[in-house]
Length: 404
Image: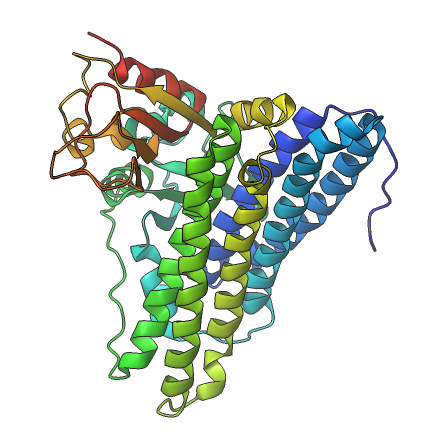
C-alpha cells in the first residue's frame, strides 16, 4: 500500500539534503545487494525508494508554494530538476535491487568483479573481542582515519541504514563497509580478527562476457563520479565542471552500446544465456544514473544561477562537497595525492582538480580540469581541489591545503 502524503511545512534545504543523501545511499546499497546476493539488502533498497517518493512529493509541494513570480519560477526550475534527478536515481537503484529479488540472474563474474571497482564494498561480522565492538562511529572516526565508511548495519534481523556518529557497533552486528583496499584490510581485521581476502574472479573463456562485465563496472564508477561532479558543479555554479558531467554521460552511453554488442556475442557461446538477463538490467539502470547526473547539472549548463538553497543543501548533507585552494608552502603544495594519503588521512576523496593557469608541466592535462585524479597526481599552489567526504574530514583536508 502506498504511503499517503499531505503537505507539511518543511525546509526545502533540509528535504534536498535528505534526497541527496538518500540517493547516494541507494546507489551503495543496490550494488551491495548485487555483490552479496542479499534479498534483505535489496528489500531495504525498495523501502528507501518508497521513502524517496515521499521526499520528492514534499519537495515539489514546497517549491510550488515558493514560486510567486516568473523570476521565482526561473530560479526554482533547476531545483525542480534536481528533485526529479534524485527520484530517477532512486528508481534505477530499485531496478538494480529487483535483479536480486526476482532472481533475474547474473554471471558469477559480476559478483567477483564488483569489489574491484574504485572502492571496495565488503560485508563483515563484528566478533565478540573485536577492537571495534562497543565503540561509536564518532569515536572510531573510521572514515577520516582509514577512508572506510559504514554503509549499513544489520542487527538482530533489522537493517540500520546510514548510521551516524552516535551509532555504536556491537558484537554480532553485520556491517557493510565501503572504502579503499588498504583501509578495508585494516577495518576488516579490527572488526573480525581475520585478514581480508578479496574474492578471486572466476575463470572464463568467453572474452566477450569478460568485456561486458568490465564495462558495467566502469559504467558504475563513471556514473557515481558524474553524480558527485554534478553536485559539485551546482555547489560551485561552475560550467566547466558541468561540462565534464556531459562528457562522462556520453562515455557511459558509448560503454552501454559496446556492452550490448559484447553481451549478445557472449550469449551465443554461453551455456545458459538466460542467466545474462541480469547484466542487461544492471547496465540499463547504471546508464539511467548517469542521465540523472546530467539533469542535476542542467541548470548550470543553461546559464541559470544556482539557487542559494541548493548550495546550502549540498554543504549540509551527510557527505559534503568542498572546493579548497592549495596554498603556497602547504603540505599539499608540490606533493602527490598518494604521497599524502589524502583519503586515508582525511576521509576526503578528491574528485577533481582545477589547475591554476597555463603550465608546460608534463603531468597536467590540456584541460584546466583533471577529473578523478589518482595517487600519482601532483598538486601545486593555486590549484583548486573539489573533494567529497565527512564534515570532520573536510576540516582536516582544508588544513592540509593551508600554508604551514
